[in-house]
Image (cartoon, rainbow, N blue to C red):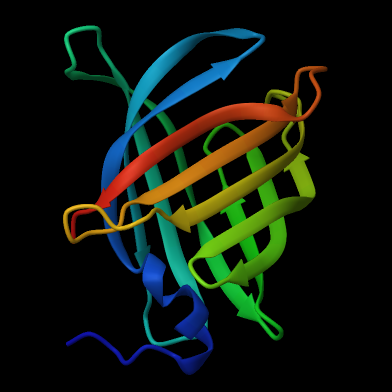
Length: 166
């Protein structure tokens, strides 16, 4: 039995479920690539969303290849349509984002980026998540990630369009 949605989560309710799709990645320090992604936003009745994202390389023939990034975390709504997001990556990076929710769009920027001694240098990031205009009776979730890393200024690194899968 699924618990009732905590009332504080109402502004983030549109994210709930599993989303699947594809995106592109690029950065001055790497070659452009395509990836498949699965993102899940869940809840347990408490005032936060439970978040998980997994990505895989898309091979030239369109099949899913090796695993790429993975991140887990929590999305916590705050008063005045603000939101706090904590993300942990298995590569030794932990990020805290702060931002705002407006209708079906969320804009986030890093407040803190911490890393282990062996992690790549990442110094800042922004993320935007939003429902795209309705098409064929459904609304996809689009997102964009800008990153400052490896001596490079803040710029687009990843973007994807995901369909609700459950």
